[in-house]
Length: 287
Ligand SMILES: Cc1cc2nc3c(=O)[nH]c(=O)nc-3n(C[C@H](O)[C@H](O)[C@H](O)COP(=O)(O)OP(=O)(O)OC[C@H]3O[C@@H](n4cnc5c(N)ncnc54)[C@H](O)[C@@H]3O)c2cc1C
Image (tube, rainbow, N blue to C red):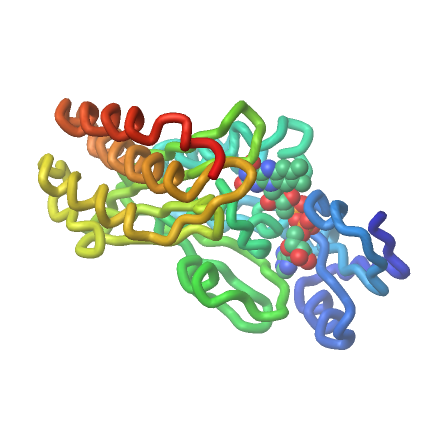
């Protein structure tokens, strides 16, 4: 069972940050849904619920999302969905259930950098920054790659771009952890493809790394992207083998890029996916 000796409820992110800095054993709590799975005693938790970080602000340039915003609030934000091609809504709709998503926060989801995270995978493909109280702003891609400071995550900034985007995920059944997830987005004249649940945390590949040059990629470009995604490291766990994940990640990436580009997957590629799936056979699920 998770136990807290003391709960602090500061009224500003700065106060929360000072509390965090004043004690090595203090921990920030978001929705607490992941933390509650732990069996330990935390001497001091810092609850951010009075810091005014549960709002989504919209300007001409960006959406500024408070770290304490519940997943459900962003999921059902019509302007955000319109501006991002609905990728976030698609990404989170199978996370446990509505009551759960009313409590789990955007900040807790990104700070945790969970390997399986649909939230991280979807936002990674967009132009997205995070703002910490102490460390200031950094790109979500840097946070994902390099880890995070011991700090208070205040806000997530999703810049407005003319996104063409799509989210694809494979789950054994609805509400399970994802086996593999992929987000593809075209913006800033190049493709951005995030691949998560490998089962380690999401990796972002962009334009030349993917071999994708055009907004409407040719079959050859898609074949290059398929190979690029499959060269990422994949691992095995109770949900699927590395070989199965590698296969599925490639398929989902090509389908996501094609959907975002508003085109069908070329028939020879779909045929190739079927042949590969047959060759993988029963090896798929367990290794
Ligand atoms: C049973 C279960 C199934 C799940 N399934 C999925 C799934 O399929 N897909 C998916 O994407 N996610 C899934 N999740 C993860 C979930 O969506 C949330 O990402 C997770 O619960 C963390 O959000 P939280 O608000 O509960 O964070 P918390 O549990 O409160 O915190 C998580 C971590 O982040 C730190 N933290 C929280 N907020 C801040 C902040 N503002 N600043 C600094 N540090 C902070 C905490 O100290 C802690 O280390 C699942 C979680 C559970 C428990």
